[in-house]
Image (cartoon, rainbow, N blue to C red; front, top):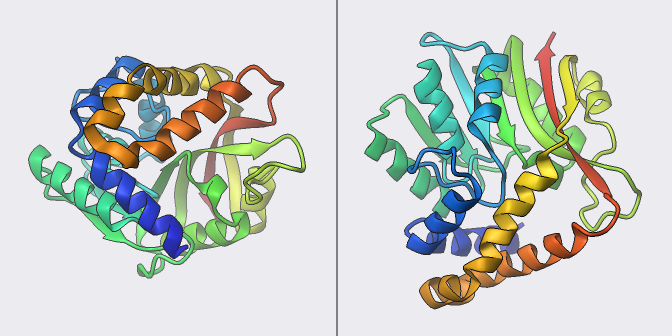
Amino acid sequence: MDEARLAFDSMYSAIAGSRVYRQITHRAFPDLPEWLIPYSVSPSLVLLERIAQSLNIGPASSFMDLACGMGGPGLWICERTGASLVGVDFSAAAISAATTLARHRGIARATFVSADATDTGLPEKSFDGLMSIDAIQFMDARSVATEIARVLRPGGIAALTTMEALVDDLPVATVAKDYRAVFKTTGFSICDYEQLADSAEKDNALFESIDLYRDALVKEIGEAASPMLEEADERLKRAKAPPRARKIFLVAQLQ
């Protein structure tokens, strides 16, 4: 975990102020506002609006963005709904970037904390909603679902995207085959579930953009670009093979 945290700290520190990385993301996701800079995920305004509507939150509500990264998607929903936000990520560099972004956006009702997503340390029954984009597949499924259930109030809603395994031998062993079953066993009912049919195309748009700008990215941020370039190479290579996982959208309500 410490090694992974250090790797993400290095990466987030490098891209937070990267002009080239901004060019990469806005080429891949032209509908996103200029200030919203994702990392290795494929949010769109359509998806963010869908999450906001699914959470059913407003100015009197609070929600968590679990594994928030640099904070952009959660802050967009915070602005859109008027709800208060707590973003959680294990990378201190990501939390620093998210805090700076919230300050620049003038959003006083958003705070960010560095913590493990399966053990946030936040008070139980604290939130009306929780969002997470392309993250929980890297965590033990039962542990993260249990933590989500712990921090949500009864009736609270979790809206998230994640990958589901289609085979038994994925390199990331934590990817579950059916997150509906996982969330049901931790006290949730399933409100919405859909395979995101266009997710591979959107993901590939980011990796193609990284590949296009690889020389400029290396020139600007040096060795910190290596993990992104390796991921892009691997994902573009796998794009030509039969799918081994699928991206899903899941909405679950705590009973």
